[in-house]
Length: 387
Image (cartoon, rainbow, N blue to C red):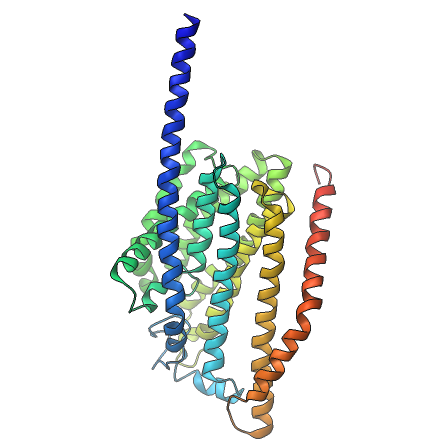
């Protein structure tokens, strides 16, 4: 009798393992196809995106793509001696930095969790990061910028873009354990799905209504995450979640505020700088997301990927800092040269000086960032529970 029961239990265990193994294989295939298509579309869209951002639109906010300048705002840029190409280059640089950070951290997560019990959670997190940094980028769907891409890639990219939103919901509602708690919270995924077809309708109908809908979707998931943080998580899980909860949340609130302010008529005039500065601010806000997840992985050894994430964060943060300094130097020196000469043009001397300054800052900045991250990690590991 005991042998029979043991054989039945063994058979059930094998069936569960086979079923789980099948799901893992399917998830791996879907992950590779969808993220591969997203990366392809993003990379081959960048030149078209850069060219599109240099086209002057007749009026705002009726431009084709988010961030384009209008005839009304162009005189302001000319008055401060900032060329259209420099503005387009800054948007391109921020979008690329966001994509690289997301890709680096997402790849490390999958690499370290491949074949482990929590691999599915790693695939989900990596999918959210990579799609969020590429075709679901803060300034719009990058599949719009690749007219020469194969039809199959476009279709796969569209599927990935559709799946990205419920994946974000699942990630927020299950982080960092990979389980829904309370169990009924899976129903909130329906909000993330319903918002997809309503996205364009609400944004055109009323900016205020659109912001309210986004607040409902994001706010409900963040509220569950906060409840779990307060009532269910252990000390280590709280520290891991803290970076996700207190990092991106304030910036998402700013993002929603930015959308709600579009309902103010004074901010939608043809010469309004609000709709020009906004896209840059949104890109900076979204860069916080991969950084926050990376810090959670580093400081509290989430999913045991802290060593590689530390190196990724060092060079990722270094890249972001150097890119921002580089763009700032080019724009600042261009403004200075134009003010002295009275003409707007791209000076090769400005590029050379900026490049030399970046080369001189590389080693000191890398040492400073690595020291800061090491000190933060050491402080976190010696913090007693309850603090």
